[in-house]
Length: 84
Image (spheres, rainbow, N blue to C red):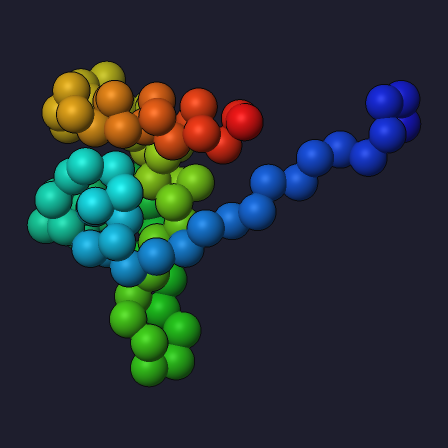
């Protein structure tokens, strides 16, 4: 492959409240959207349900009506920080 090894992005998982804080949304909104099928919730043993931040971000990008302008700014900040 030209250019060397492709960059593999690490997955980041967190609870709904953690993801809500990270993206500037309410945990209730995230749970509702997950229950509607926007992104999966992962259950592992007896731990708290978790979401993949990459999947939540993909949902935020794909939605025609972003939940809040704050969420849009937060996603842009996260993308910018990860690009550095």
